[in-house]
Length: 481
View (tube, rainbow, N blue to C red):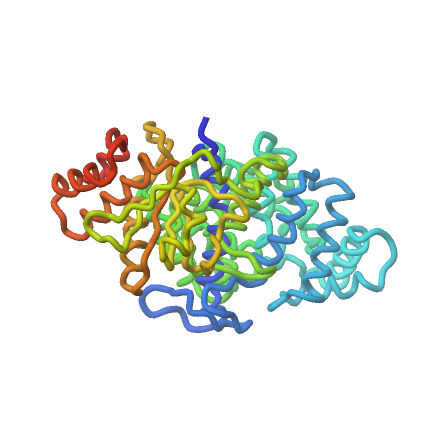
């Protein structure tokens, strides 16, 4: 069985989609909406570097790192670990903190009890004093909870509410976290977008209201629901952005359209786009997140796209499994020979195998496009910057589910090669064995350069004797979907 089945692609897309939405929304938070398309230009309330995510993803990662250890998120041990992570983040990593979250985390330091007892007590005390604790701060960090119990919707709901209660005591905050977490779980396991799937899991008193709120948001224009610092309107804006841009064709481009619409909702743009990105990532997978975003996205605590995939997949598997992808140190195999051959159309594109990752200096390359799973120490390869070593989610399998967005991914990989070459870089493109994915991308690149498909195919076959050069992957590379 492939180690990258469809559900794993979707799980990998949750944190990646959230972080990209977050970074895309950062420049426009509490500011004028973008003219044209939103871009990851940085700035915002941080201010942030281009491509840097904000507190939405930062707090999600506090939860994700605990979940990746395989803990039951409703247990005292896990809630204590999450509470400690929130506090450490506030003291040493937070670039922007919501008013309510900051108040609870600060007040909790003066209380007695275990870490999660202190936070919960501070949260309840704030609610008792103000009655205003339904901000979107619990909602924004909940997407990873949807991966924590993929086969148990009730466990997912319990975890979502327990983690929400650490800082947000209003039942509406917990309900929104339950709804979004269950929608993530359904998107990953069933491949559909359904925010109503968790209505039976919310507070009994609020079921009717939530049904009405979701119905009002479905297909609506984002930004029309009022201040989206409120958890209900944040959820509505994110859902509106997703549903109003859904053309019903299952296209990977829905992810990009949805995030652009989420940013245009205005106000708390990073949160709304982060939420939309998490659910769209859960539906369409890491394979639908475009190169230019994956190349740029990064943030506290020093993570990049590959790290987000490792965390999300580990959570979906019930915790890290030492020595097994995605948490394995390296996927290198000394038994696989190197290839290191020049592309017949462009000799500054080097075609290789996973073994060629260890020959970067010898090959004289300044950028890498990887088409197979890599270990934690494999990326970035020695001598590469993180921006110049990009992974693509692509499989050898013939079934359509093996590569649900094959034309998009091939086009994206070819685009990455063309971008690197425009930057004057010599590029290594490789898969594990160099027999199928590497020549397919080399073929698409040649066709995109304007070479006739028949000539491009013949050139690639002559340059790489013994390649498979057949089946759906090869056909789509040459002729499109």
